[in-house]
Length: 288
Image (cartoon, rainbow, N blue to C red; front, side, top):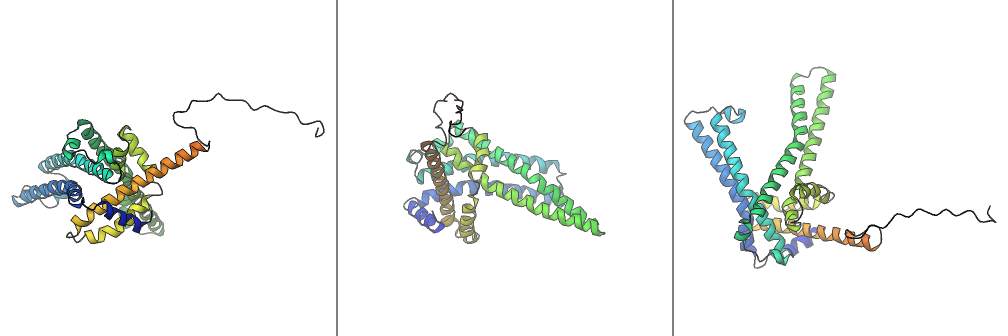
């Protein structure tokens, strides 16, 4: 499906559902902004009463700051994780999964298994993203230190290589983050798979398909930066991405069935046939 057709069909799906979908999509963003604002307010109070200096906000030497930051981060993850996956659950229902569209949102979020899977998925994506970001930080710090102290041609050559490796590492990290964006929707589509397996398979699932998300972001993000268009365009962006994930899953299922029907691959539940050795035939008499 082309990008224009995807956007037009998304608008068709949102007819009569835009208000509810907007509220569902804005809930995770609202929770994120709430805890970020709480952190900023506490930091402002610490600066106002002279408990910390401005430079200490970035050094992490204040015990009070570290304790409050850790508490806010934990609470933010606990609150936003089920909201993100609940939004993905409802968007998957809008995009064609009727069994997921009629369940009340409160019933979804109060499910203990759903909460555990949501929080586990968020933690795994954070861990994988942090591990992937380590090379970019290492090469970036190395490039900065070499750039300051470089005098000879050899040091400048090493600095250039460090900068290139930093850029490459950042691009790889961004590519991974785009792949992990599909995790909430894949958790909904495959509820029987473990969270770690879904996170791992999402990287291969989005291979060669990240351009669709990039194109959607290129269309929707510039108007959304005006903030006024955010409530109108955010549900369209998330619904379009959910629809693209649903299309990709159906494409993979069709390819699997096609391979099975053509005999290229056995069906998952097919019995294993005994291995037969190839019989060797002697050459014919007239060809001997």
